[in-house]
Length: 220
Ligand SMILES: [Zn+2]
Ligand SMILES: [Zn+2]
Image: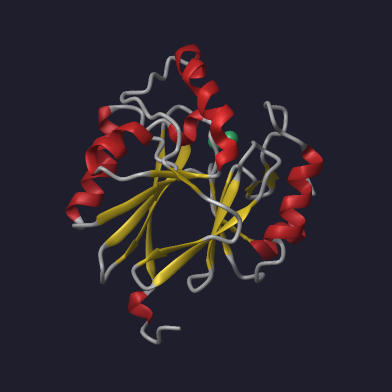
């Protein structure tokens, strides 16, 4: 494990689209490598915010990672992919939601500004994604949507949970492919095994910790 704390990952978050979705840029200051988690940017102002940050920090985007396939989390996939020429990575089970999102985008009046297609790279449970000297581990956390994953940065003590776990709440389970029992199991057996002081960065709302959710989350 690297000794120098300066090589730990940095994080920038944005709130995008009418669903107030959290988009995260996770980057390494030394190598300048970054990944974009759930790019939800849906208009040119939001794109400029995201691209402005990435470009002004001279970051080198490696990958777009989707925690799941709901519209609010994949809306900017196409534009980010087009701008940086990078692949979209997600669990293969997101395919049906990617498909549904196309119709939903019309229904919600949130058109995709660039065609996004299906993910280019399939992620599986336990897979390690390298960013500079740091890593993100893929943890499958289904229940809110098919193919939902969380991303765990062990060295930094961060976990990105998408819409599985929120501060004092959990994801909806009434969408196609959703299951309360499965989601509860995911959170209890996959996320609550992480250290208590792990910071939880969710797909919506404020960050929290594993400790606080074990203690105060009334939905579990
Ligand atoms: Zn969702
Ligand atoms: Zn969402």
